[in-house]
Image 1 (cartoon, each protein chain N blue to C red):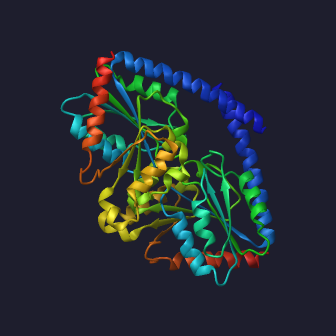
Image 2 (cartoon, each protein chain N blue to C red):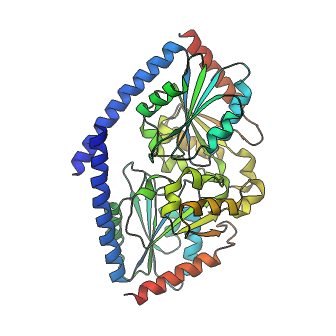
Image 3 (cartoon, rainbow over the protein chains, first blue to last red):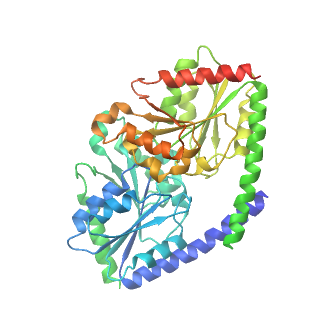
Length: 223
Length: 223
């Protein structure tokens, strides 16, 4: 029985990677950058997104797919910014896969959008296992979660291009060492970009916004 | 293909529930209480456990199974208390299932233990789906995560007997409403016991310790 389960998973993952590649090619052709935003429940994915929209919204056309097991709390919040938003429900699943993402992108209608964010289900394990076709994978680790998380949830840090350390405003009351967290993440992925910031105060967003702008430009040039 | 995947999952879940029942019967016979401790990464599962061991350790014999995708950070921390501890690695899985738990209990050797805690993988989705045979399911929601989590991750709150709201010492800097969180959890499970506490300061543990003592006594009587 164990063998059958593994076989099923492998087949699903192979199909998933193929579909993710198709999405990536489609996005590249249309000139839209797709960002997969991941992190634990409460790490601050939505709050970070609100700051990004605030910084990029005047110049760029932004789409957001809010993925949750249930509720439309985040979609309501984000839609108030004027960004184009849809809520996706995963039907109990702990992650988005490539097929669900492709269907979400079709429902959102990405025509004319410069950048689309997929706010994945709050989870440090499952979303890391499923490619969705994103050009950039950003994970958020928040100060209250602790700096040992890269050791406990290695795959998330292996597959992410950027690690945002959010809630730095709370650093005085938590025992969190930014350098230790970043060094631990780099044992899994030497190229990961570590950025400390606070979605609450707005501090520390410059490097992230700069990186996103560069990626949007690169995407447009490559069209 | 979709159908096949669902079929596999259903079969696995049916087998899982059967094995969980066998574990529950075994624990009941031996007079050991099994507690499944769940919550997001960084919610404070280990810190809460340390406080519980501090309060119960003199009178009761305690076992702990630390489940993680990787690392032995928590097992090292907990073993310093003198409790009987083992580290379980889930091989990439985002939860413990009944079979893994049964094997963990055998490896720990629960003979003579009054209470065994399974510290599940940090995750608000998957662990809620898998019965492990526990007599008590305790989930931890921490203040920095936000009070909207019962809306987004309903199953965890549906299946848990107790919701601990941890890190209450940080309440002044986060916008978290205990009553709102508890009311939201109760829309999923009217019987859930909500307890605010702080593993950092030790405040608020009395109701939890009282509940655990009552459950241990009940288990001994039922032997």
